[in-house]
Length: 314
Image (cartoon, rainbow, N blue to C red; front, side, top):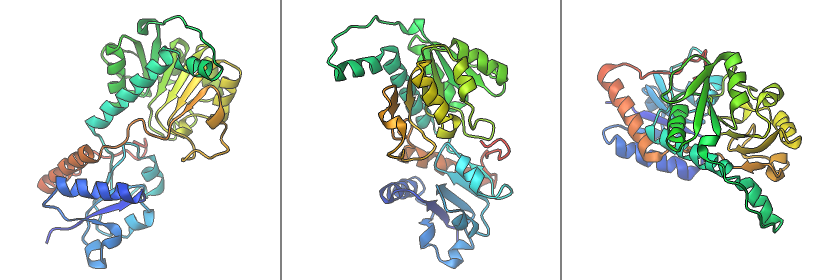
């Protein structure tokens, strides 16, 4: 009898049901069961777990677990909550997610390029004033993080006519993008960017990466887009940079605490656009297809797909 696959989640019930349906459709020959519906005998045979915000105790209750497939691209929660020497974690790498993120980056870059925050304020104040147009080629967009998501976003911005630069921890080459690396490279990129788009994974090295010192290094009048993780940005330092006018606007899709607490200043700050973590949602069907491919490879070869380096955090 083939070993069952456990689906362990702590997400909305309707989302869980949609993922279960999509996974079952993509893998009709596999037995995919919700963890809570597994009996003790089934749990003793599980070798693969598909997870989304799992309770670590549920993962630990699978004694023969060989590897863990995340439904998310970001795995910092798994890395921090599961044992370092536990089963390897495979993060979600879905071309559709890269396309969706690139779409969001372009949309909100256009929002800032066309100075829509000013028009929002003018509407509120009943002001009729036409602002001077700025061509995409006149603006430099800096991408923090040149992984799959960052590279896709950079390509979309280049095609739209923006001058694009990028930063990564180690040296990388991206077509039509001037790249920077290391601490000195980060400062150099921030100094020339009119819009900074943050797409780095959350690790011990990137937590608090954008702080008062880094905001001071940014061009006066620059804007920030954070589609990475909330703790990459020091919230109080960002608010200070917005309050004193050094930065003109911040588009924030991620926060230290989600949902964003009602008493957060971000909700009502005139220079902040708040989004409810929607920049690149996992697509049910394409994610299921990716996972089905990973599992088919494992069944055929016994090899675990490329997994997360827990020391690096991604």
